[in-house]
Image 1 (tube, rainbow, N blue to C red):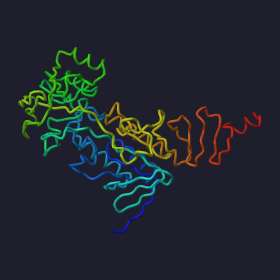
Image 2 (image 1 turned 45 degrees about the vertical axis):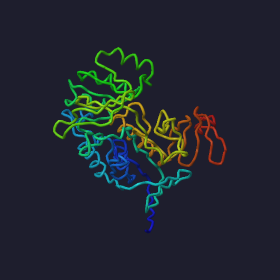
Image 3 (image 1 turned 120 degrees about the horizontal axis):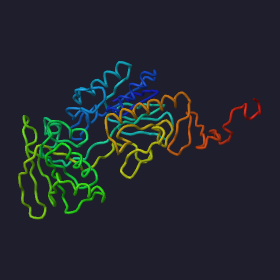
Image 4 (image 1 turned 180 degrees about the horizontal axis):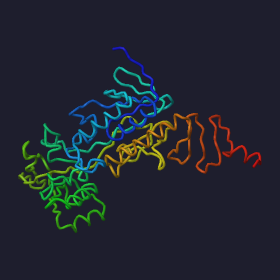
Length: 369
């Protein structure tokens, strides 16, 4: 198969709220962005459009007073990006080379050269891998099974119901506590007899009268039907081996998230979990010209609206960089596309040759008024 070589000013990886917002902004700036996203794959749990594609009612995205279906919202995002001329490519990126600009992306049959790269590949919820957990129609994902209490907990389907949260860390305690605002009862299923959550999160959950713990227990299957959604779960006691059917009307998997950053390991600075580190004042990574936005660099908020906001930031950062304007790096210094480094105190400019010059107006240097 012949290899095709493409050259673009801006490439965006990922088609969730962050990626599509970045596409809207860069396309309006006449940067002709190419947006690349992984094809839909059930086994790899990839879905063009991001996690909102497996969310039913979205009630907390501004501008939709009556709410909107997740797939419908993402379709509108995409139409808007298309309207301004975004080019789309659905393909697997197999390797990236960020050692020098233009950066190089490799797919099965393409080599793509790019001057500015925006990474919006998101994060994926960790799943148990049990029957009934997959998204509909293969399971009850989006029909009683969720990995985001903040997103789905307030929905009518979960109000005044018995809900199960799986996990024992801070995420699980936060999800369980949040769900008590809406559920009649929340049951936390944990494989051990002690929680891994921080002390303050444990105490908050233990004090909540609506939360009950089911210890030393594993969930093995989620039960239900297309009309009602989730109706119960199979639980196995890990000490006795006893298997029981536990009635419930919703399941929240809260065993953490994993950022989709494996392609960039060893090239971009990341935290211990794998989230890309960015500047506190921009979306810049440790490599000038590479920007990260959305859940790929946000382990805290993980909301569609915050992802869209950082997608806007990344687009503006990329536009400034390509316009030869300095961008703030995670180190505090500012860097231009030519490789000029402005020190964090803004006092000096270090040229690519290593020469250091003062960052002052010529008038100030000459003493003129």
